[in-house]
Amino acid sequence: MRARGFVLWFTGLSGAGKSTLASRVAPILRERGLQVEILDGDAVRENLSKGLSFSKADRDVNVRRIAFVANLLARNGVCAITAAISPYRAIREECRRRSEAPFVEVFVDAPLSVTEARDVKGLYKQARAGEIPHFTGVTDPYEPPLDPEIVVRTGEESLEASVAHIIAALEARGLVPA
Image 1 (cartoon, rainbow, N blue to C red):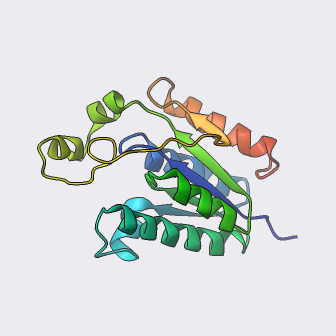
Image 2 (image 1 turned 120 degrees about the horizontal axis):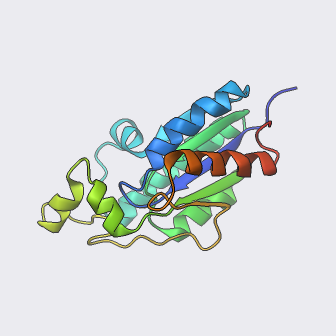
């Protein structure tokens, strides 16, 4: 019997921990026999969305592309993990509606003060200096999900606790074997 695919959609501010969590959750799912692919926002922008700006319209195009690929993977039995800011609620909801496989939204909730303090790439500093226009959380909005399946608070809990919370929630939904 083929494994059931699903979309695990991480959303949150830059620096909230989406990519870190995705990279920690993926090997656990593989160990449990699932096929897993990570669609990281930065990699997708470089390879599938090169040339798009950070305007709302272009961000929506980028998120739709991520969702399209995630859906292709998931409907073919793969756990498609996305790690992209995906700042606008309406487009995330559109992605959920279009998904042909279970769609699990994970809100990686970290306050702006925490994400700015982490700022490993120096992006917040550049945005505050006016060097990066349309930067989510600084000059563009981030719309938190209203009813995500999973919430992890990476400003308050350890990485290990967040990973354990995600895995337990997937087990409870019958998407991941215990």
